[in-house]
Length: 261
Length: 261
Image (cartoon, rainbow over all chains, first blue to last red; front, side, top):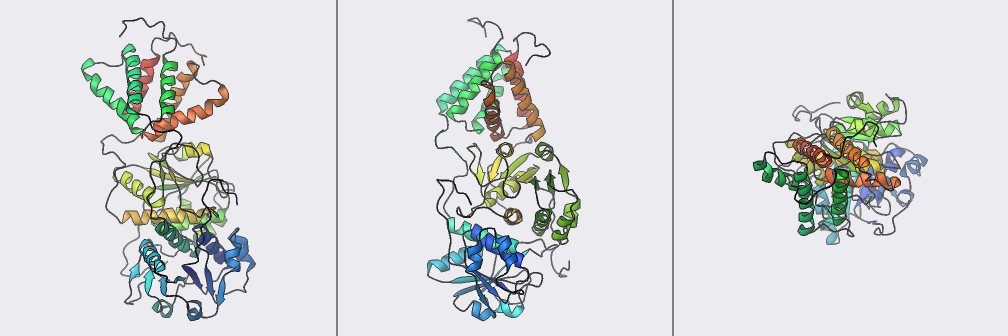
């Protein structure tokens, strides 16, 4: 697992713990371990896994998240697995007629973060493949976690369901605004003056090529051209490149004479 | 696939399309098909899958999303797979030194929804397991999709990465506010094919003007130039204007002869 030198250190949060209730396939347990660690979570609990534990199939799929599997707590009963929790969520797609708050991933993550800030210990339970949690198990939860799935095709792979929740947790943890327009810090956007000189250079050469006809439309055409380059938010380096482009394109036109328009 | 009587009808959106570039394992392709349909997406495109297609391993994992696999478009080249797209996202975790917007899943989904509301055709490219997209492939994109992963354990399973994006799409579809990144214009953005022809036109004329020296730097210089125009998200009309600009600039260079480089 390589890591760029200037990247921040790994995130590995103790809470929330993810509880897999009666998971069937070892591969799915391994895939859950991997995606938890991908999004900075590391606490996994298993309730009555179908196959013997430790499970080599889980290890094979975890791809480096072995330590999540090795540290996994295994219990036979749900009540033991969640005994130390102060906030319990149950992931389920089906309406149960239970009077509980129903949260989407984002809402669940926000509530979990708020609870953790007050020292709580939240857990999220996911049921077995295909069958899902039993109503008795859902009834133990403080709230229901539900994903916005296609009603015509709602059955999610277990690791994909956990992936969506873990992603929502990672996002909720960040909460700081990330600038959406990537800029290399070493090459700042060009000033208006630099841009203006680029535009004048281009327009001058276009006049020479008789580009602006009819002449009364020239202001509109110029404005539209400028708009393209303004939208690109050019850097100084890019302005230099574009001026090189213009020079290369006009090369060989023959001697410009003073007074040419 | 049973469905409760009182559930709403299935959602199956044509756009955005998800493009898997050089996927290796059939199981992963099947898992991607399944999770796309889970979150209401149904357009899958494959570029040069490693194994023969159709792939029985993909079908085995798709669990009922067979029709997504059967309808999948298969191409050998990325440029063919995205030729009809008007907005291209590339999923990548690594910084590339490319001047492009970088969007998290939520931001990407909001921008895609906004684009679709204006009739655009967005695609999102995911690279092969382990290696990810090549820089040349990322360079084709209008924006980068990046997930908030643990820097200490960043390598996501392919279907999990797609799951997070597809979930963000499902969430964004349910919301109504539209971000302002997209211009409200009558003229639609140019397709990748139209842009490609513009770039080829420009590059040909620049070769003629001996712009690309030293020659071994030409690919980098071309990529940087393309990046400027991709960022501007040109309309068809603007592409026509720019081609007019190129013609006007090279006018009077003297007779081009066949065989000129």
